Length: 172
Length: 129
Image (cartoon, each protein chain N blue to C red):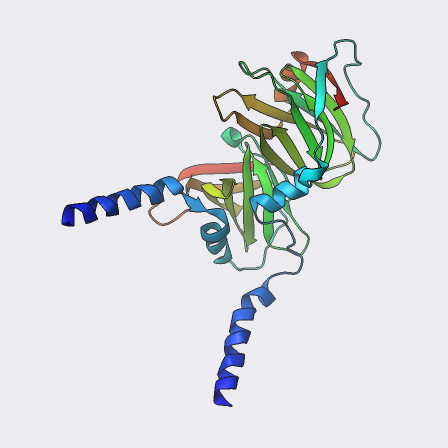
């Protein structure tokens, strides 16, 4: 009986940390969980054939009630392979060095995934009516390209935007 | 024999240093030590100077933070008036920061390589909205 009581107490003590955790903290903890949230399941991967399209309209209109996102990829040395973007696990488009594209997203928390031989994630809460600039930084290094996805301020993004052309793509 | 053991210990120490601190284990333990109720919702995009634009996100009623900064993945907690952040890539902690909430639009404190401790060499850090 005493042994059963001790076992029960030990079980309660072990369960205490889990019970103390806030039920509202449901964010993905690990890298793998975040990749799944941002890039989606491996079987849902899409591949794109990308081209620079100088004839495409240069700017998208700001839609009411949504956030407007520009995804820019400046030229960095010899990297020529495409870099694609997913939002919350859905693939949306791709860039080549020196191209950009825009998309609209519902306001709220979103997980962006940039994929170019490796993956980089961006987690951000977007507001309706605002414009955001995301840079895909892909720098050539043998065997392991440096790849980052980060937010740019409007002041930093405008000169990059001026040096890039719109991208168009086809799903392979 | 003693030389071999010494060499092995040295190699082990070097391997541990190269391996770095793990986000899931060491980082979680560091963040779990701070348990005060949060006093502020830090969700938003912050200007971090050399860190670029830092995105922090906290669920309403929660303590934990997730986000991104300068290509790093960010995990953290708000404890009282202090924000604790880990900057990591693929489960390896690169930097950590301890910032004090100063009004609704400024976080001020320090960061260091690896997980902050009393012996860390710290660098000032400021995030502004």
